[in-house]
Length: 312
Image (cartoon, rainbow, N blue to C red; front, side, top):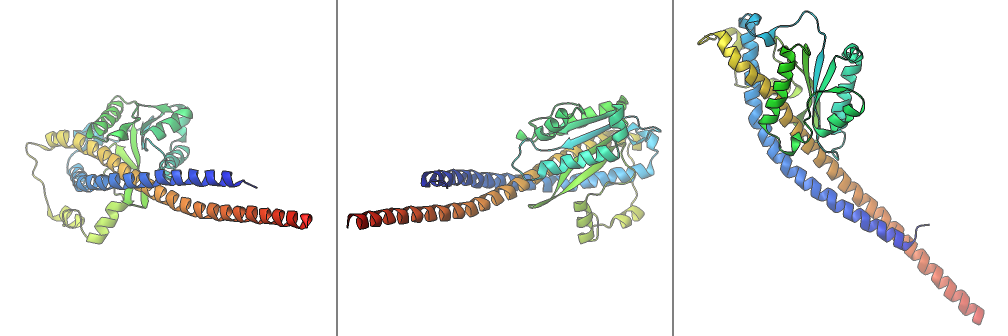
């Protein structure tokens, strides 16, 4: 049986851990607030830009822009996997890594076996996980979430587009956690290149449209498509040359912000749970300590009584 000193040491250790988890919860809550503000500011622009790209692609010749053209044969694939740089966030990192591994084992197993599957991991956890398992990695974006900025998204997309244009890969997919609310995230696998014919809709986008009964600008999507028309000035090709890079950069930027907000929410929930569990453990340890103390006092009383009886 553990001694009173051992139990006291254990209580002190749990209390110290609880202080750390409580502090981490407060830090994550503050970071989550800022991350939510960033993602709520970015979403409408990114959504509307995607809507416009889908509209333009339906009205112009896809041959006007090389990133619209689907290749006859897919010989290589690039997966952009967005994870966190740190752990202690519950199943946040494990979920997106699991999604990537499921996609690799089902859809992209032939490319993996042929050596034409490459991964671009944003975040330390994903990079280290896949590098240890012998996957071919592109770039090094460990530490990207120490200071989330648009330059990171620009670098990621530049690397992906250059490889696509050089035919190092023929498809690019983006995997990340979409922020739904503080306690839950959606695992997303989004096609990036070639740019899909229709706008990719995430669960949050679908829920918002369903709740509003309209697109983000208050006009029904189908109604807008049927009633609105665009006049291209100077011409569609020039507009696409400007819009397509911006669209792709903002898709990656939005994914980074979504992942960052999801990470902070997941860590806040995990630390709150750890703090609550520490409370429960402290109650059990204090009860155990009191029982051990009572047993020790009872034993001493018995020894004193036995000694007095022996003297008498």
